[in-house]
Image (tube, rainbow, N blue to C red; front, side):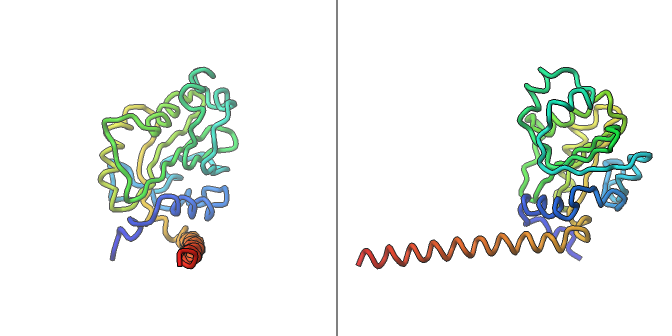
Length: 213
C-alpha cells in the first residue's frame, strides 16, 4: 500500500478539504490520527492526549482578536500587537470554557522544514507557552506521511522545551477517511476553474492570431 499518496496534493486543497469536512467542529478529535515523537508508529487521538475536556470549535485561518490577551492570559496587548496581530493559525481548536487551545499547522509534501530560522510556528508555540489561563495546550503539524521524519526532527529540535504544551504530528493520509470525498470535490473544482481559464486564454489567443493576419 502507498502510504504517501497525498504527498503531491497542494497544501491549500488539503487544508480546505479538512476545514469543509469539519464544518467548524473538530470531528477527528477521537480518531487515532496523532503521532507523538516518543511513539511515532503508534497513532493515538487528541482526546487521549488531552483528556477531560470537550472541544467545541475549530477555526480555519481565523485572525486572533485582541480579546485573546485576556482570555488566554497572555503577557500584554503590546506584545500581542508586535508578534501575533497579523498572523492566522491554519487551524485552531478551542473549548467553550477556554481551558483548551490546540494549534494545527498544515503542510504539504513540498514544504520546506526549517530548523535554524524562526518561523510563524515558533510564534504560535510561544503563544501556547505564554497562555497562563489555558490548562490544556497542544501544537501539531499536519503533513503527508512522506514528511513525517522531517516533521518530527523539527518538533523535537524546536518545540519540545515548554512544559505543558503537547506536540505531535497528524498525517494527512490518516485523515483521508474523513476528508477523502471533500478533497475530491476541492480538486475537481480547481480543475474546472483551470479549464475555464484555459478556454479563455485559448479564445484570446485565437482572436489575437486572427487580428495578426
